[in-house]
Image (cartoon, rainbow, N blue to C red; front, top):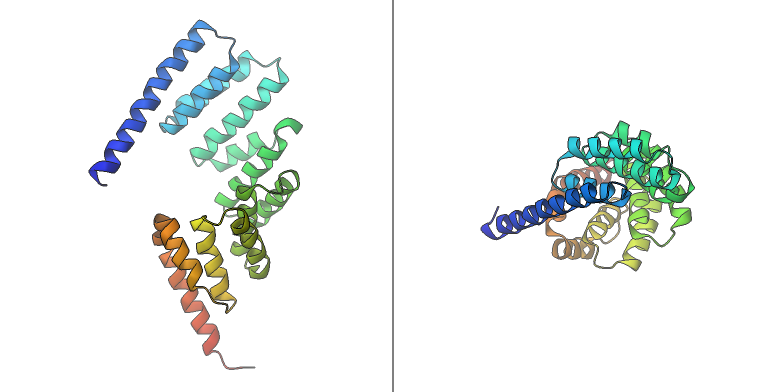
Length: 227
């Protein structure tokens, strides 16, 4: 890590710690402010204090149990705590209980949770459901595309990645994954990778092993004799 990056991360941490202090004071002054509990849990997640965030939201769920709308928001927050802590089974349990007000966001998080658990079929189903209520949301479209790619549905994945890039041309991750799809399909792919390398160099570097694996797969397929 460079000195510049370390200083930036240290500054972010200090800001978050100050915000924790402010929100704790806000709760102590007005313990009936449900949003303060939610906001504090969000900051605790940013600080990787997952156990504290869980304890806080569990306490808040008890305090505001009679307020249905508040419970929904707190439950969504608790699901996000578990998701951030990579406890996807518990995250799914929380998101699965959400009512209509949070259903769209809940479906998206269910898709992400199942995807993180490697269950791409269920992830795709929830992502497509989420997409019906937010058809122009690039994050949702991208999750649909990612799961189609994982399931090997290349033609459909290409269509959804193209939708993402039409809405967000500077999306380096989508450009990289669209390049992978193009490579498998025997299409021109160099431009996608060039854009991805410029737009999101970190994701591009992380994707080099996937790129090498797909290159080997394509070469193997090309080397097979016709049946």
